[in-house]
Image (cartoon, rainbow, N blue to C red):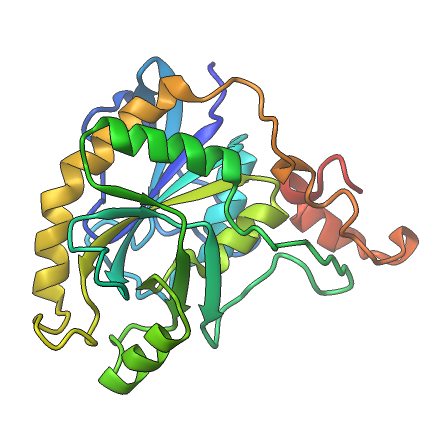
Length: 286
């Protein structure tokens, strides 16, 4: 059976990938509960990939409720080394127009109540997250999106808020004054969990609106968000199909070694049940 090295986490409006062939579904149980949905495994451009709808089929999970740890644990257990996240976002800059695509390189975390780490319960690890997205994977993703003819911006800071509500005008104006480029609700804690798991992570962020700061544009709404996402859905899927053959077999980044120097707990004191629960995450480290 072919290895599954690449996964796509689909966000709002991207709940499946019709181009997959030889499709099978994997139900994975994890120490952190069930993932958002069954994981669809199929072949795309000759490569086996996994697809997971972040909010579940039919969009059942709010951004705060998404079982991020279960999702990442499950993908890691399948052997995944790279993740492409497809996300909706609001634009905080005039030049990032609705239906543009942004490949961000930074995050500002403004969430409040999520499970941010696999670690704890007697095992402490401090990963570095100065560069929260894999630069190598992000560069390749940018090239793949550009090849579709879509308008794509490379780099930018992704503000992540708790949700599920949209921003107030006051919040939106303050966020703009901080210099962030786009705003969304799900890149945290996905990015840091991916890094803890040694998985390369990059985001294809689809601009759906100008949040609520723009005086000449309509304030963001679900209808606006979905309409623009649906208009870009084909671009998302085409870009991923373009990306697959562009990826080198072996990774040359440092994402896979993130845990090598991150564990600070004395190994003799780490509870055996915690090591067992984190088996796919800490394999080769403990």
